Image 1 (cartoon, rainbow, N blue to C red):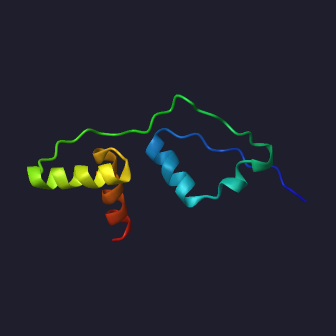
Image 2: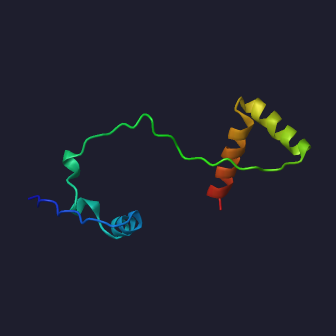
Image 3: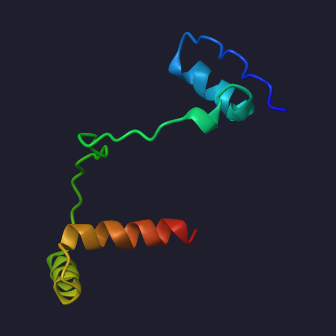
Length: 88
């Protein structure tokens, strides 16, 4: 038999709410069987522009590698960085 969900507490800050959900199971507070899928078509991933100085020959090699893969060179750099971080 399913028991009704507990009422979720109110929070003063987002950090307080984050700590709460890190330590508590949402199934005690939310009836996920009644949840509905939500679409957010205008939600953009947050990115930050940075400046990175590269030696010209290195940048040219990166652009050649990107061209061979048919991807923009900045996207290739991001993919390589993500792969490297994931492998650590």
